[in-house]
Length: 477
Image (cartoon, rainbow, N blue to C red; front, side):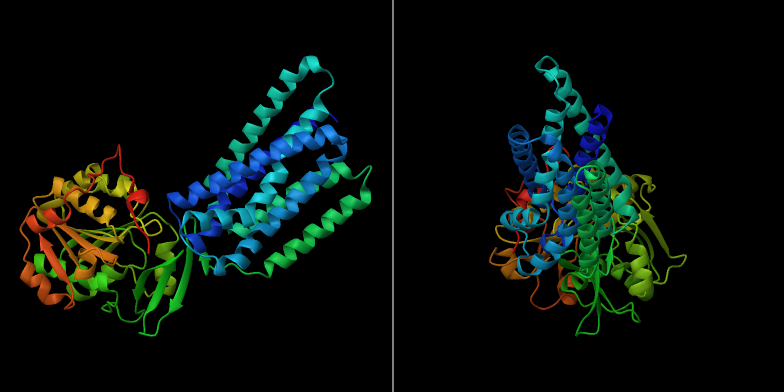
C-alpha cells in the first residue's frame, strides 16, 4: 500500500477519535452535567481506549496480515462511532449522575469501543509501511506525526466549527460515513462483498440511531436545552441536568424559584426605583424581565451561549427592547468593556453544570465587578453547594477580601451544614439592611451580615486566578 494512502488512513482515524472525544461531552451532558469532572472522565476513558487500541493493533498486526486488518478496522470503527450516541441515550436515563464512576461508565458505554478500534489503525499501518528494520524509526516517527496532526485537526475542527454547526448525532454520522467509505475503498478489490456489507450496515445504523431521539429540545454549543411546562404554571428552561430558569411566558413578574425571590429581596433592601444592572449569565432572562416590568430598569446581559437569547425569545416570552442589551461572550472579558462606576447592581447567575465557572469566582474577577459598580453598588450572586459547603464559604471569603460588607441568605439547615441548595451571597461597599431583607424573603430564611457572615466563611479558601479549584470544592447532592 502506498505510503501517502497509509498517511491518509492514520490521519482520518486519529482525527475521528478526537472528534468523538469532544462530542462525547455534549452527548453525556444531559445525564452527567458539564464540569471539570465530566471532561476528566471522558478524557481518561478515551486515553485508556487509545492505549488499549495501540497495544491490540500492534499485536494483531504481528499475528495476521495487516493488509487484511486495516479496512475492516475503519469500517467497524465507523459503525461503532455512529452507534455511540444511541447507546448513551438508551443507557443514560437509568444511569444518570454526576459522580466520577457514572461519568466514566457512560463515556465507556458510548465511546470506548470505537476509540479502541480506531486507535489500532496506526500500529497496523506502521506494520504495513515497514519494509526493512533499518527504517523503523523513520516510519514510526512519520506515522506518529501524522496521527498527532490528525488529532489536532479533529480537535480544532470539532471545537471551533462542528459543535456550533450541527447537533452531536449527525456529527457521528459524518465521522462514521468517512471511516466506512475509506475502509470500503481499501477492501473493495479483494473483499468487495465485505465492503458492501459495511456500507449497508452503516446505512442501517444511521437509520436506527436517527429513530432514537436526543433528549434535548435544542442542543446548543454548550448545553442540552429542554423546555418543560411545570405544575405551578411556569415554564422551565433545563440546561443539562438542572433547572436553570423558570418563567411565565405571559407574566414577567412571575418569580417562583426561591433563590430568585431572595435576590429580589436583597436588591429591594439596597436600592429603590429603577436601576442599571449587569447580569452575568442570561439563561431564561427571568430577573432582567422582572425588573424591567416592575421598575423600568435597564439591563446588560452577558451570556456565553449564543443560542440562549433566541430560546428566551422564541420559547420563554422575552420581548427585547431598548431596555435590554445582550452581550454574547465570556463575561470575564465582557465586564472589562463596561465603563467604571456606571452600574448599580451586578447579578451573578452563570453556571457550568452546578458550578459557577471558576474564572468568575476569583479576586481578580471581583476587582472587575467592583470597578463597574458605583460607590453604593451591589453584587449579588447565586451559588449552589451542599455539605461540607467548601465552595460557598470559599466564595464568600473571597468576596470579603474585596468588599467592605458581605452577607449570605439561606435557610438555617443550609447555613448549619445539614442540607444544601441555593445560597444567595451579596457584597457591597455600602451597609446592608438585614431587617428589610428578612421582611421580604420567605419566612424560613436566615441572613448573616458582615462579621457573622465572615465568621461563617472563616477558613474558606480565598479564590484567585492562580488557584480556584471550584469543581473540587463543590459538593453535590
